Amino acid sequence: MDDTITLPGSDQAKTADVKAWMRFLQIFTLTLGSGLMLAGIIFFFAYNWEHMHRFVKMGIAVALILAVFAVTIKVKMSDFTRKITVSVLCGLVGVFWAIFGQVYQTKADSYVFFLTWALCILAWVYIADFYPLWTIFIVLVSMGVIPLFPDKDWFSTLFMLYGAAWISFFIFAPKYLPRLSAPPSWFTSLLFTIEFGVAVFVVCFVIITGYDAHNLWMAFVVTAATIWCALKQKNIWLYSMLFIGALCVLECVFVKCLAREFVGIFFNLMLTAAALAASSYAIVEQYKKWKQ
Image (cartoon, rainbow, N blue to C red):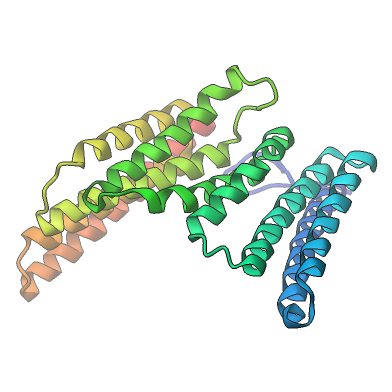
């Protein structure tokens, strides 16, 4: 059977074969099954919470952690399956600390819970070298660190500095840490997209409210870094995000400067449509250029 198709105006492109689809189904079912297993464990504790002794609750959680750890160490499996198993193990650690907090009523703040969870799985996350798991780890650390930002006026700047620290770590650390591989494109794109989104929000907030622009300089630094990454890596996603951010800023300028009467609103819509069309054309042309 011929595995290629011809599209108008394009060369022949190979489609996914049976082996690729089987690989996708294996990954999908394994990931879905792991998530459902964790959900089942959580709902099991939630449903039987009042009927279980506190030592039984914690004993079950510890037994599950040890069982999954033993499977990870002893059972032969593919590299991807092992990484998924380690991810389940990290999730069970969170279940244990949640049970521990409920049993002993530690009254710890939520950020303490997330930081404790993150610190306990750090070694496994590093050994697994699995970037979806790194993403979960960053979320846990963020939920523990971000509430500690003291000054709301500087929150956006601190958040951008925090994100820049993570981006710098994953760009430069693989050169010095032996087990850490270079981050995939989707991972760096995700981090840059979040950072750039915050930068655009800061600029738009300043334009609309006229608030003190003391943290505007950091937004410009993040924007420059995003432009550099998009052009250096020929990343069409980040390149598109730059135009979306520019359109958001331009729309804020239109809303702030143009009159609110019918003529002003109509003129705003016309300018927005023209900017959107020009941006779409530029993105498509750049994509064609990079694909050559």
